[in-house]
Length: 80
Picture 1: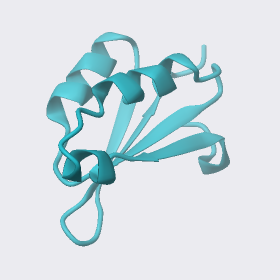
Picture 2: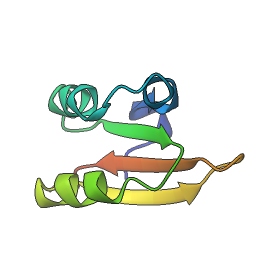
Picture 3: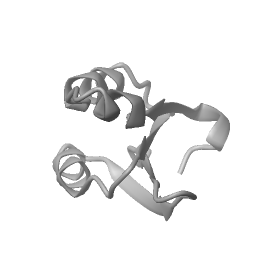
């Protein structure tokens, strides 16, 4: 897992609250990651379909239950 300083954070809760689908923006951010970087997603629910999708694209994930009913998911690619 890269150091936390190498992770970019994306809180999708405001998008979901407005009724917007965050997946396109998440995938844009994932595509822009450098090999030594990761992405932190903050969501109001466990984003299982996203975890499966990114897992199939070679990403590893770590899940934490955040405060106030939120979930924090770290995504990164293992370096060789």
